[in-house]
Length: 153
Length: 112
Image (cartoon, rainbow over all chains, first blue to last red; front, top):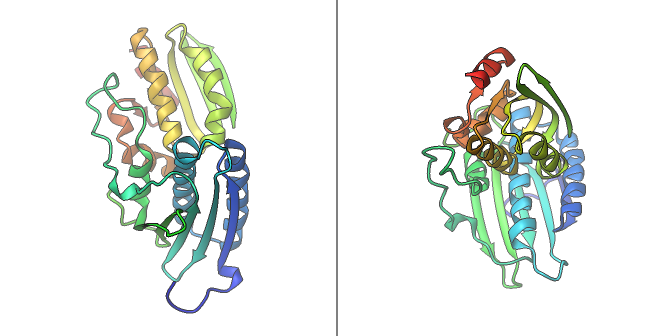
C-alpha cells in the first residue's frame, strides 16, 4: 500500500467465517465500523453493497467444503475514496473475468442470478484481484466518496 | 427485516421494512413465496421502508414474479428509496418487473 499508514480513525478491520451466520455478524460489525467513518450516505450504501455481493458470493459459491473458510476485510478511508481489501482462503475466483448477465428480454427468460458483479462494477472506481502465493483471494475494491459515482449508470 | 401482508379487493399488499441483504432475504423469502405463489396472487410490494437491496433481493423478486406470471398472477414493486431505485435501475429490473412510484399506480397496474 502506497503512502503513510492511515491512522486508526480512518480504518478498521474485521474477520468472519464464510457462513451465513458469519455473514450476518460480519455485516453488523461492518455497519458499526462505518458509523465511525461518517461517510456520505451514497458512499456508505455503495460500501455495504460491495460487502454484500463479495461476501454473499463467497458464502454461496467460494467456501470450501470443510466449512472453515474465513474472510478478513480491511476498510481504509482515503481522501477521495474508501478502499476495501477482502482476503479469503476459499476457492480461487477472479471476478474480473466474469461477464455481466445478458439483458433480460422478458421475465420468463431473465437470468435469476449473476447480478452481483454488475452491482459492484456500477459503484466502484477500481477493482483489483490477486491470487496470493499462499493460495488466497485478495480483492481490492475502491468506492468514491463523492456524491456522484462514476459507475456505468 | 419486517414483512406485513394484507389483502384488499383481490390484491395482496406486501409491506417490507428493513434491509434486503442476504440475512434479510433469508428471513422473509419462504414466507413471502408461500403467501403469494401457490394462488398466483396479484401482488404489490411496498419498498418505501426498504433501505438496502442486493442481488439476492433482486433474485428473490425475479423468482417470485416469474412464478406468479406462470399462474396468471403478477408482481408490482413501488416507492423504492433513491439508493434502492438506483440498484433496480442498474440491474434493469424495471424491464421485467414493473416499478411504480406509489401505491395507487401499483394497485392499478396489478388489477389491469
